[in-house]
Image 1 (spheres, rainbow, N blue to C red):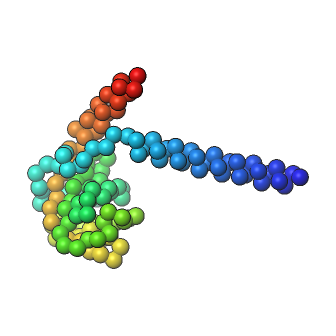
Image 2: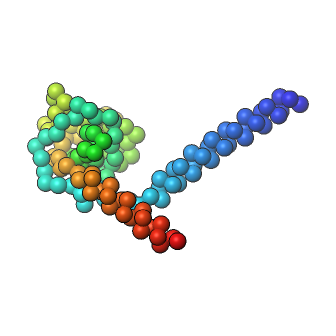
Image 3: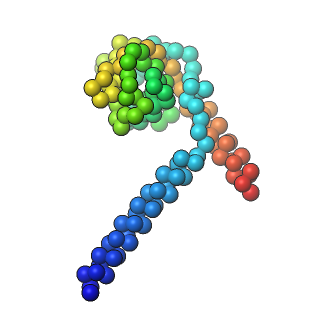
Length: 142
């Protein structure tokens, strides 16, 4: 009898953990979405990536945003065939002594996608716009 009670408690705890994960995912999905392309500046030749923390986000079949720091992101356009970019679980970015330029590649699975263009993203403006959108949404819901 005690074993079934323990099993029930473990099952209940596991279910609660899963539901918490679902709620946080739904909350994140319902946040205002902004298009990185709207915040991308003029193309640059290269950027420093020594403090890369692995942050990235697929934007389209040939564009990815790579975070080089907390408030430093770059929209990278790749050329050629890069079929799995939108569906990748992880990517790699080649660099030479911490510098990423047009001669480097985005690694997606077995594919090596050539970098065509690098554009800095105005992350401060993007975050300010996201905050404003959240405030406006809260006011509309009230």
